[in-house]
Length: 429
Image 1 (tube, rainbow, N blue to C red):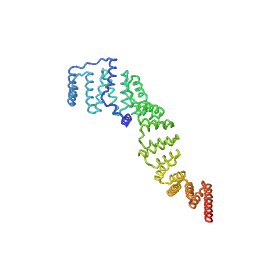
Image 2 (cartoon, rainbow, N blue to C red):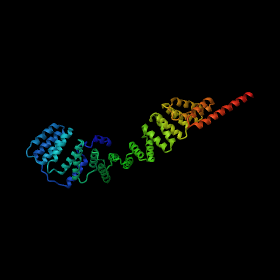
Image 3 (cartoon, helix red, strand yellow):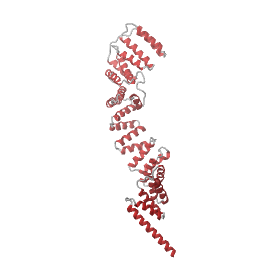
Image 4 (tube, helix red, strand yellow):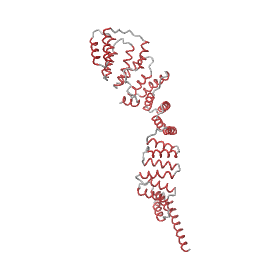
């Protein structure tokens, strides 16, 4: 339901939270001064009975007030002004009892009376606008508000925001922009407080219309005036959608430094943005801290990103623990083979052999020939020539590694022959 969603977006209570607003009264008083209408006078007998009803209402005895009003209603020859005030009082009673349907009908009866004082007419119109809105009678609410605008020479910002809310509820997003911007402009001209919710509403209109440049513009203003986590995250996402990765990263970093990135996905996104910007060391440090603090989920994918960051930063030794964690969480052997390669780069031959064999046991490798090439090279360094040769012979079966595998086999054979000759020489000596 659009009204409920609107309330959630704006983070406010329903607009019609009170019977009358101070802003509306002020505007009506000004209008009343500019236009004088001849209206019938209220006679003493009616005034006396309404005053008694008011006393009952002030004491919270609405049954008493209702009974006295019913007596007024039974009077003969009531003039239009007396009838209007009677229905206005009925509306008040219904409103205090949360009986909005009957309150609406009572206010409609007020407007049916001729020769109303301008202040009473505009007050009733504005209240009916709110009641129609609450009852989701949006077209009637809009029509009544337009009638109110026609009688109000200098409206304050709030009625324009109400009009924008009605347009939102009608899903007429394009039409909602103008009254929202008008409210902001009036507030600026009158040095009134600019409200955060107005900009939130304007932002929603642009977003619904997929007018992303204006979404970015509004969010930028909101960040300047109300620097909040959600606005930084939203604006960063919009920059990413528009392909402006530099500004996206800058906002993410600002939010991180402010301590606003509290979700796993946000820390990971920041790390990936840093990697894309060729800042792998910082990416690794941020992601590592997130994993250590428990903010970032301990998943294969996240440990893999951390390992990648350390490797791109040419910190192979730092990459090994991350790769080891990622490999332990993986069902296939791909990461084990990458771990073996990292051990190979650091001349950690036995660890290299163990990781390569673990990867091949798990299987589901995209390039088993490469795994055997790594395994063979590390076995060779350990002096395990027979096992190394076997690994290279398996790799040789794949055309993509055939040339390299044959060279290694020749090298293993030569080294094995050289060691055999050396051993024989030592025996003769």
